[in-house]
Image (cartoon, rainbow, N blue to C red; front, side, top):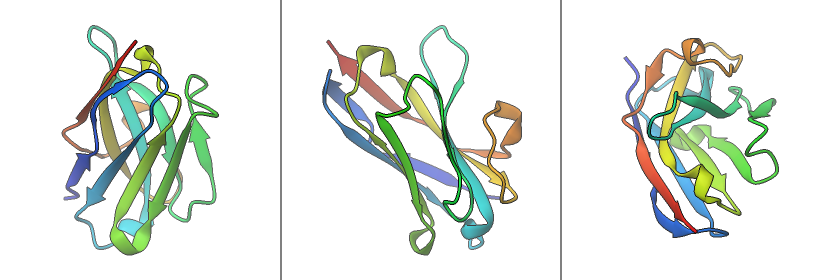
Length: 124
């Protein structure tokens, strides 16, 4: 069982930056592909970004491409989401997800483990 704990959410103004982190309990973290999703009130959970086990392939949703950066530190069992130029429409609960296997995915069903989420609120 992989446990994921997100941190770094908060209330910011439009144009600000935030960095989310997600710490994994799994000793074989380096073998997991990782992703970030988000869910705004009244909306379905949507893909934000994903990264393969060796950071060789990064994928982003079109709405965040060029503003968000996903990265990982396998020595710390942690994945990050650097969010820049935040917009009010980025307001959501952000979830970290882990996928067994080295290849990342962008669908909810691609992932096997989920964190509890961290709230990000961007005011205009």
